[in-house]
Length: 138
Image (cartoon, rainbow, N blue to C red; front, side):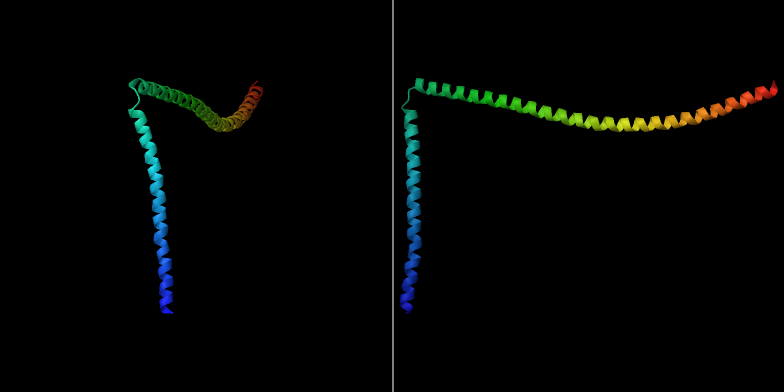
């Protein structure tokens, strides 16, 4: 029985290296295909005439410029959105500040109104005293 168990372990332990070899072969095949594609691209570039290369570079330059222009326009639109958001936040903040100033000035006005009322009472009592003094002295 011990021999059979040993054989069983040997068979299962041998499966791992076979799977590893298959994955390595698959990976090597993929990398080979990728390198073959790169080789074709390099050969295509090497065997192109300078005029064809210049045309390709010109096309690439135009493409890059158009993409850059589109990106700048997008940034401009995004900048306008940001500016609008900042303006709205400033408007809200200024409203809060103005409300605080308004509340403070309302309190001050009420305090002044009370002081004026007290002064008017005092002035009224002073006027009454002067009238009494004039009536008594006349």
